[in-house]
Amino acid sequence: MPLSPDLIALLTPPAPTRLPLPPAAHPAPGVRLLRGAVYSTPANARPLELDLWLPDEPQGALPVIVYIHGGAWRTGTRTDMGPRLRGWRPGPFARLAQAGFAVASLDYRLSGEALYPAQLDDVTAGLAWLNARAAELGLDTRRIVTWGESAGAHLAALLALTAPVSGCVAWYGPTDLTALPAQSAPGAYDAADPRTPEALLIGAAIADAPDRARAASPVTYVTATAPPFLILHGTDDSAIPLAQGEELAAALRDAGVEVDFQPVPGADHVWVGLPEEEVERCFDTSLAFARAHTAAPPSPGRP
Image 1: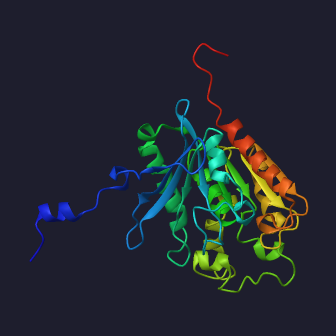
Image 2 (image 1 turned 90 degrees about the horizontal axis):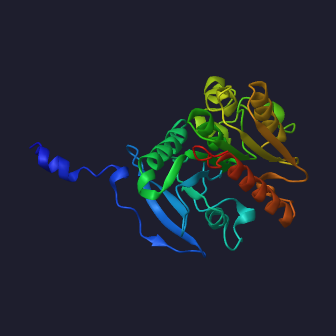
Image 3 (image 1 turned 135 degrees about the vertical axis):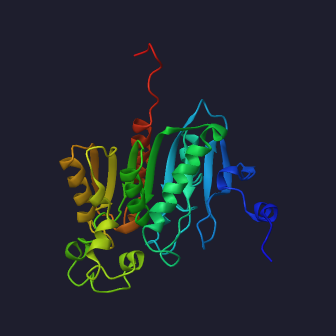
């Protein structure tokens, strides 16, 4: 017996933009945290959540940082900005909220759950959720910087290149999947291996699916309308070669886009080998970039 329209309507969950927001926690002085807001419900997948970190006493509508975690697209959580920052007190997200930002740290479907472009679809949906609830949350979504590390930097760059945002901070992310084999140390990367993180992301070995790999590469989407980029990449990165950051920076420069590419001397992937003060410098440099590129425009009639 078919269900009645009234019963179907009752059983259909509300859209994420209409769900109640989580209760606020206060994990650090001056910081309010809405943990686990559902922002998307993809078909045949778990609901996707974000954590929203906010200043307790905002001064007007807030600029937004959309943060995307790393983990080789295979693992990782939205609570983490990388292993070198896990012991910070207050933590990095709280620090950004204390600096006057709203920080939305997103879940996305991992490669064991869905193939690319599901991950880009998810973070794009996160941006749409923030836009839909901006007035309710006190956000200025005309001022958004994407920020990610490793696999998250790959997605942060893709989001910045395919959606209207104000800037992108990319820490040691892959930018051209097709070039990874040639740029890696001899014997370190097998383009025919279907078990590499990149192959698991696109569903095939890079050598067998160059078109898919190209479609999943940020360099493919660089145009003259791209927002400014800050790219930080360790000179000794053994997982994602420095040449990946160089390639994206070169493509942006060639398109006439503002880009600040900063090789980080002596740093391996996830800032391994970097002194603590240099990890702090990377964070502070990124915060300064986000501030500069989300500065409120002057009021009418003022310089």
